[in-house]
Length: 108
Image (cartoon, rainbow, N blue to C red; front, side):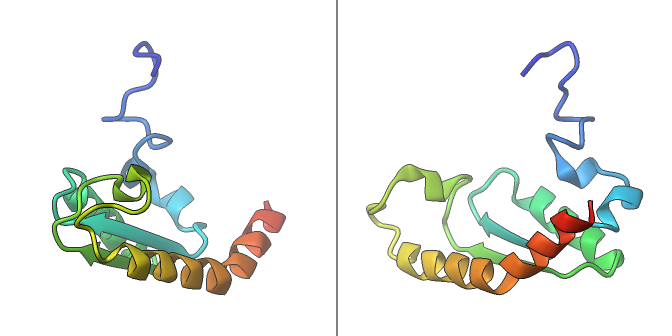
């Protein structure tokens, strides 16, 4: 981050929760995964609430005892027996929502 201009407390390109409604109202289908041990968990729920208020297609799944970025830890993740189920959920979301996302980008 360039500390002179990139501030996660005010830059919505870093923290989408901070994006104005005028931008969020155009968001495509959005899927959020959060772990209960994620320090950004509450922000994930705040983002969900903003998108719901704007009548966007949004879903959030919360995983018990998972930290932030849990899918970046490599596979297999020792002790995280839910990972195969999580990956199946991701594949389902991607298959289901990819056409809508492609259409959204084509509008831009």
